[in-house]
Image 1 (cartoon, one colour):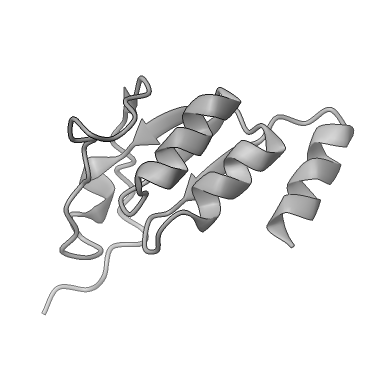
Image 2 (cartoon, one colour):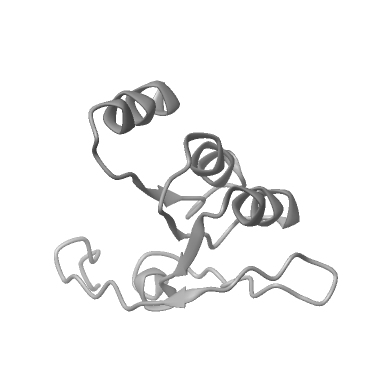
Length: 103
């Protein structure tokens, strides 16, 4: 469904960016590669398959490591030596609105 919507957006001349793979692996990154998105943002759970697809499609990966600080105890997966190493952008995504309440 997302791919169809994103292809329609591109057909109308709109740029495409994706919020991808923040909580599950590869579906977002593979869709971003399929539709030729400009960026795929977050990527905390992306595997080597997703990274290779992004690199092959020329999609710019964007890591937002601080965004998961308040959402979940996730580790940002930097690419180890055996995974594709596309250039990455590092951003903050500091937004107080989605932060869960403190207990």
